[in-house]
Length: 185
Length: 287
Image 1: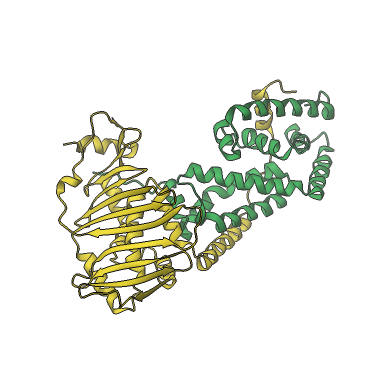
Image 2: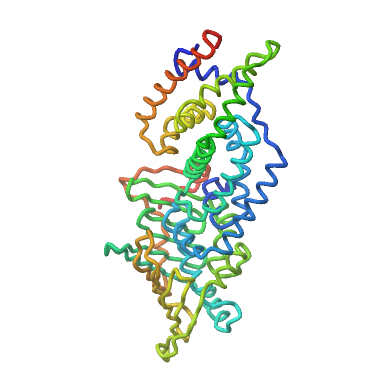
């Protein structure tokens, strides 16, 4: 008996160019991931929701001209758009300042809180001081657990360059966290 | 303090970050996104370009999409209200053998030729530039990647029957447009067709077709059989597709079953698709 094989996600990507139901299914597959990415990049959940909205609305407008043909291509494209929107948001000084202030406020927490609850705002405060693209790299690599290969494709940079960049970013972060939190982290 | 990448990973892993989604936002955004998508669809003059891109980009659906493209030209240039429509639909539906040659002329003068054979509405063969050779005998489907010298089965019979057919086949052969009614309606409205009576002859009708400001061309229909013989279209705007013209030539002569026989050259590596592996072993389609 022949085994029935469901439409693959690659098929879904192809259909999503012209069919709303396929696009809706892709949305369901990626909404959570993109929202999570935005929270990691932007710290504030409300801002993350706003940016997530912007990202998917852009996808809706551009999907017809999406040049790829596989789910991997789509994911790379989607994350590239997400990274651009997150960076654009952060580049607005007032927002960046707000994010920094919010992160700083969050660091003044009580000792009763779990260390994990304190560490995130502190780490974010350090990450937000990096260049926008470096922030994206850190988020994709360590918060979204992506491979170097995929990050390189999303950001359209060479993998060896990316590896060196990550090494440098971690050095910067180490210094930054050391200065801010001394030996606490 | 972290010493290396792994230690930093561990720090991140231990963070307690609330990334729980808000169902209300999720639903509202989905609704809005699909609304934007549909609006774009209504306002877009690029629907056919999408079909074109599917043809050019999709390794999975190239065959079906290419045939959709070729067939859709016929489908959409004759809105259902025109009497000639029913005749042409009926003629194509009844054609047991269709050989489609697509000649793509690019701006750099390069001409790419792709061939598609369709027999008894169930057997396919495609010879394409990027995707090599695809053979489907109605039971199994084999893809020969000419570039990498790899052979693999890309669909099981049930997949084709249940999915491919549902999505493409009815559409391709114009049984009905139930699988893509919105697209069909959009495109039907977007095509403008005018019979060029001065060019029509005793044996053929010639129509001018225009799709928005994107494509224009001619189609030749056999008066006796109501089958299309030839379509030539050119992009009105010279965009980044670098296609100078597209010619589709139809032939309805009997196609030998040999065209649909599976054959894997000796120097090809055989890579059964994982989902179909058991089945392909049982079938042993290499004769």
